Length: 333
Image (cartoon, rainbow, N blue to C red):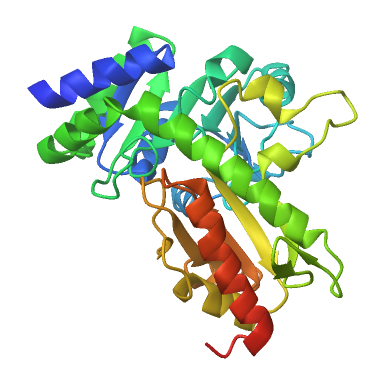
């Protein structure tokens, strides 16, 4: 029912998140555990990780579950599920806005904060009721473990989740717990570095995207990149909110770019030296993928990038060489 190293990692996660943490074998198991505990009749959710939508679909089977968008009316909604920063774009959402909206209906705000772990963002400060992390990503940080975490506000909630976890057998294994405990010792070093690198790289790529086709920026011809998404590139909304207010420790280490063609997007991940072509992310090594390969339905020109702890000048040089090659050869690499 309990195991020493798993209890230790839960205590550390509780401390750094300001709540009561419980660990699971997968992020998807953590999501399902929250729904099993809360038994929602209605969920508000828009976009984000496709696995979350699959869990909701499975949970709602034969239950008459109501699913609405975040901008819809929340009548009959028990849970507002907000993923921020958003997968795959790394854009931030205003947690206080959604907390006020769902709390006015008597519901709960659940936040998937996988793309902004501490010290970047603390969702409880902005009205979250439950926080979820896929520990496989930035909490793990080395691409060598699978796991999920829920953080709740009270020991009573934690106890109910703990009892359910015994029944369902969805515990985090001893090896994964040990690996995660190892990773948390460097969280305060890894995450700020990854955030700073991603912000610098996203802004640099955005300058390329803003360059006309007949011109070039820093050695890359304009036109090859159509758009860049990242929380650092978001401006204030109509209410005066901006991501920097919520993300006190820095921006997401993940962002997305839209290339000129699907052919470019297919070739780029395999044309780089320092970026690993992979759907898993969050490790100290930078990774990149054409998102449609793992998330069918995405624009085939869309590339998701997770930035590691390498020297950002090396990452820029690597990306510069690959983009120049794409421009020169029409993706025939």
